[in-house]
Image 1 (spheres, chains in turn purple, brown):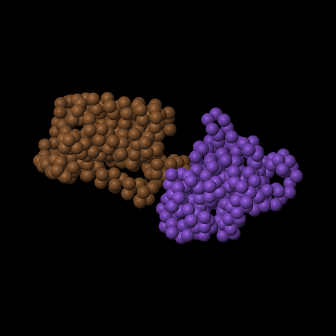
Image 2 (cartoon, one colour):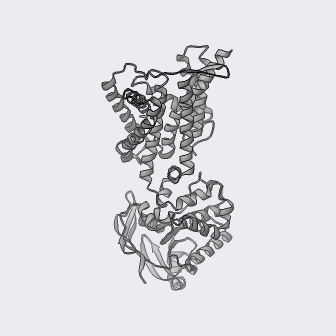
Image 3 (cartoon, chains in turn cyan, blue):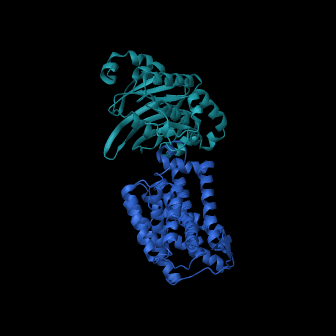
Length: 237
Length: 284
């Protein structure tokens, strides 16, 4: 199994504060990988350092074998390394459809705009109903659908999702995870960061447990989920 | 009574040109949170650009197209040199930096053209509309301002590049994550804002004599118009400009022209106090 995304010895932080102390992680093509850990473990920072919205201090990020560590975020996005960021970060004053259109800004994705738009509307019929509505006026669940939909419009080769279920009602979270499962079955490579550890481990193939800026434990999700030590020490469950 | 109405009509027409200038200022602020203090100097550059092109034999109205292109290119250069390196620094830095650009333009302009007045002397006819007399120059200037605003809206709402400008204005980091080269978009936006300022200067030059220092008052009017309309809101800025023009037109027959500035800035302060996001709401 070749690695779609290969992270080696990644160190990063904010100002003087180091958050990541050498993260090693790889995402296999066509699989769903999850990164779990307590608050403040460095999950979001890992994703941001991979994209380059936080500058990596040390280490490397390889995307399908190519060193992309120091490329700008928009270049990585154009190559198909796409992040659905924490807190949705929608274009609040633009319509639902304009948000989706902006997801397909890169020349690679623009070619498939019509087909991808159809696909996203099939996954989230709710978005089609609200296509002309301003994104900022959507409900929390709809906003998360739009954030994922916008990410899919970018024609991702690896889709990274930061906190899919944060702040959502359980029913909505369940339904979004259902969509994610569908995407996984269609063969999309996914790296999921998620505070709902149960769901994340149940759905994913492979898991990394992050604590204090390092990967502490890794393994097939089913084994990680059963590991008593992991449950007590790192996940608080 | 007819004289007053004629004056109000004049005010409405010039107000649209003020509005165009204000859109240039408000667009740059809305997209990148930069208050461009070189705005007035750039307006003056637009005046001299159309003057020079006219001297070279180009009709002022044809010159407008060239002025727009020069403005776009000049704005991109100013962005790359004076704004980009400090785009993430505290706002005071970009204020100082664009103020420096203003001083340089005015310094060089003064050396080249001194501060004596120039004008663009081309044949102007008068027209009668609904019984009122207006000059063709005023009518064309107002029409051009409306057309340019229309084009801007078409660009921002109907083209992919224009939507990217709005996306970057909304959330620069998210735009970058979606593959939008945000620095490129910021440079283009600064270019467009500068082009609008130069165009408004060029239009004003077809109406009144001007000096290299003439931009200052229009910069101030742009601020008032932008704040009236809600900073960052282009439509609001256009209406803000029209309101200013109407005020000038309605008071001009009764009081000395120098009082209009006093009135405008009293309104400016009142708006800031009671409608801090403008009459039409803040940025879109």
